[in-house]
Image (cartoon, rainbow, N blue to C red; front, side, top):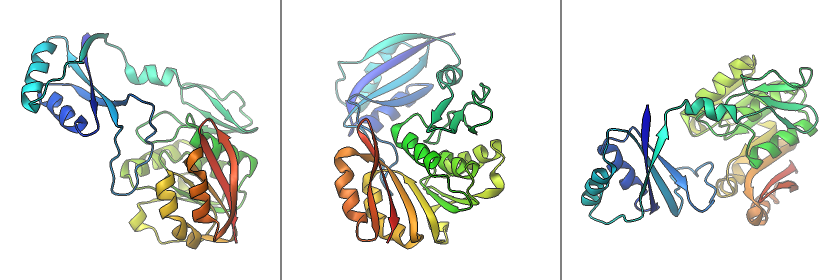
Length: 291
């Protein structure tokens, strides 16, 4: 089957309205894409961030007349959208195509992330079995990879840990497979908690990982707290994380652009001996100990 793809550049103020208009015109799906390489990974509580320059992409079946669709959309929004373009797409299994590009990845010396379509390259290593999914965190982004590298270099043997902003559960699962006793996985998104549970079951560690929404968490004190979110919520959460981390306990923070590192460090230095542990591209990972 042949599909038609309608691509419309817009700004953040119009993206949602345009997306709704395309759905009303019969789009099978609508996706939003960044036009300027602006990172948006995990939203701060109560926010829905959007790129300043956004590409709205509507997928239609081949029977649709894209010119008519655009005419109706312009009429509905009462504005001209002259820079749109249409493309023809051949039908394919897009999820399978995505997974075909997702290969086993090594982090540090002994930790791997392996999709279900592959045999572990090093069966004797610590292998996290994980496929791409809706929740953030497969190890492909520098923010996640640096946390995995930290865990490989600092195996949390016998420790209880917190994975705050767990996404797919990759850090909690990696920590358990590297010897942690128990993990508390916390996320704002219920979908992330479902993904964490499912991935924990695939890795046979579901009995050692418990999931929570933030308002459900009982504030257990931990010797290791991992948080891969973004700089702004990390700064807001600094006093809370200090309460959650035991004296001399370790903290690992990621999701921080290099230019934001000083602000995050400043928020934590009152309660932690903390510094930049590693930089990957434009991203940094901070690590330290509770005073």
